[in-house]
Amino acid sequence: MEHSQPSVATLHDFGSVQVAVPLEKVSIVVPMTAREAMTLPTEGVLETLEAMGPAGVVIPLRCAAAELPATSAWLRGFDLPLTLLWCDGPQIGQLLADADIAGPRGKGRDVWLGLGVAAAASEYVVVHDADTISYDASYVHRLAYPLSQGYAFSKAYYARIEDRRLYGRLVRLLFAPLLAAVAEGHHTAFVRYLRSFHYPLAGEFAATSEVVRALRPPRTWGLEVGTLADAFDLVGPAGAAQVDLGRYEHHHRAVSGPAGLEAMAEAVAGTIMSVLADHGIVIDAGELREPYREAAMAVVDRYALDAKFNGLRYDRAAEVEQVTAYTAAIEAAVPPERMPPWDAVDLTPGAVTAASAAALAEQGSSG
Image (cartoon, rainbow, N blue to C red; front, top):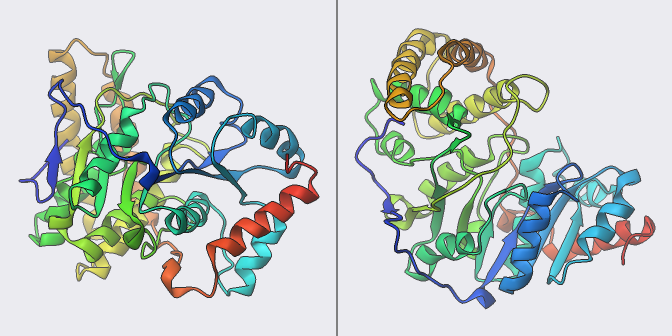
């Protein structure tokens, strides 16, 4: 990936990382869908958390009512300090409507609910996905370590190489060349900051409870970019760090389809354009078409060479097809609707947990 001189602290894994953070200070938010529950990767994540003993585990769950009893019972079978939030429950929907923050439902909204609950309970909040095949207890300690050293925001990075193929396609083929094109005419601290992250679309991050309560994540996709932008405003590059998680492997999305990379690309591009505008960089998407495509094709050529050098499989034609799809996504992108900061809403985390508990009990799955 393309990187300028880093403007955030970068912690590398040189093969000798041994750090530990007091887990009584840490609550972990693990957003989950019914599709991810009751699978081997998710089971491995939860069993690892059982053995670790964090202060709390908050699971914002996206799940249809018909699937809820079995999913909830399975989750409650783990010996965890678990707070289960049924994000699709009508009680939570009504609670948000009463607080005048009803709107589109998506991963960002679900994570926002979990963030508020976790920040009310712990000094540090760690967020990571549920479908991590290579999950290891060190991930939580590594992400929280910068917080224990005086930083306020921490972002994960790692290599996306599996089955002798390069992944991380949205970062390689959308985020990096789009920001490279923007940087040609806008050499600002904010652009330099965004480009300094090795894996800006990683879903794993950690922050102090104070920062968490001030985050404004997009309601659907684009959560990762929105969080980076908020961290810049809240703590600046000097208060942020990125941490190497070492080996990392998780579920890959298809390119097409309603939950595929092409659909995500439009939301990610919209969030990028939105946060740039928030920081004084207003760009017409049409004017970015050629600069982006030129930068993206240069990335394709460089990664083709890198793959050959490492003996990896590399489907150049497929990568070019994605660049074409992402070009269209940039032109179609619209600014996302964002959640408000928890500190600015007439709503308490306790009300969210109570509403979820009532919904779970009503479905006969309170355990």
